[in-house]
Image (cartoon, rainbow, N blue to C red):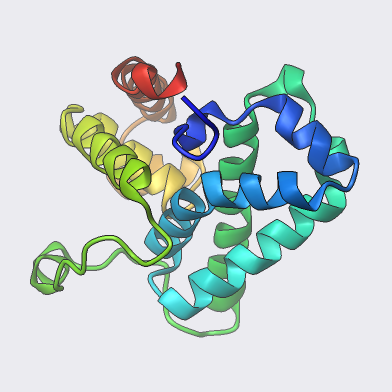
Length: 194
């Protein structure tokens, strides 16, 4: 499998090392392999295409500047990029909320069901579309409590305590649900890591 058809989860640490040395070609390859997934995540968290696009640009600028700080011992390159994107998107949500712009409340499920499914954005290729579908399927197969806890933690950026308060559950229960859910997702998505 060549680099243009490799799933984003298969980014190699060597590619990041090349980017750290200033290789524009490696940076383009990194962008091609990861941008659709990061854009989808940012869009899911922020709920605004323009803001997600702007955030994506900021993320890659930060990656270009700070790629030398990537530590292979702390996780895969894709995990690093996803964590970076998620953190920056949640920072934007919190900043927006503190300034009184909108809320961080999730879209009502009935309203979300009425939104048209526009399919993949122009940034997504077939591999990214398949990965996105696999992630959605894996999330949907989780027990409701685990799915809800993961969505609140990763898409709304709530802490374990905030999730426990919102769901009126003990913090230990929330931590267990998140850990079990993440373990099940890792198993369900293992083929993408190969």
